[in-house]
Length: 228
Image 1 (cartoon, one colour):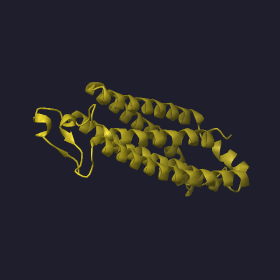
Image 2: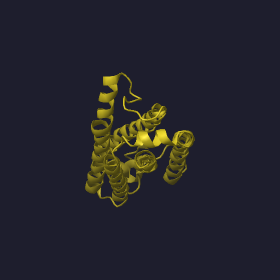
Image 3: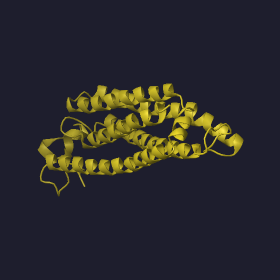
Image 4: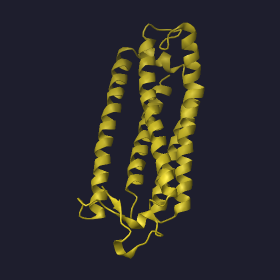
């Protein structure tokens, strides 16, 4: 496990944490540790791609079998909310990338600001999703006793559409929530001086994760909201 060595290079406790950071004893250099960590996060993200690829394949199969149900179900969605959420996530991807660049340049204040904007964008995404999209659908579903159908359904297979919709967007929303927790931890650590030009491994990993969350939504938006 990596440690903070206050004796390294004559540094004192007054120096920021990123200057006092030393890699774990099993790494030859800090660069080796950084490269290994980055390979690890990429391998993890590959499994995330496989997870969502299964949902995309299911969507493709059911859209081929029941195109009228998919189109009818998509008609209940408001593309404007999906579009706003797309813009929100694109902004958040930019700000987290800028936060990484800020710590590389030792711009600590701007790094904290950009991380905070990223967190707020994530919160805004979930607020729109639950208040303006899930909320009305759940209220209607509770009224008729079925979350996956509507009394005015125009086809016999619209329940398949709602299963796909809730599964894909629900798993994605869970990833957004996890990302919010990780970003909040980054903000806390950043304010402690943990990241700087020579040490920002965790921030790089969380940034890559957040870009995948953004990329998945860029696929979900047209597939779910623009079919009709």
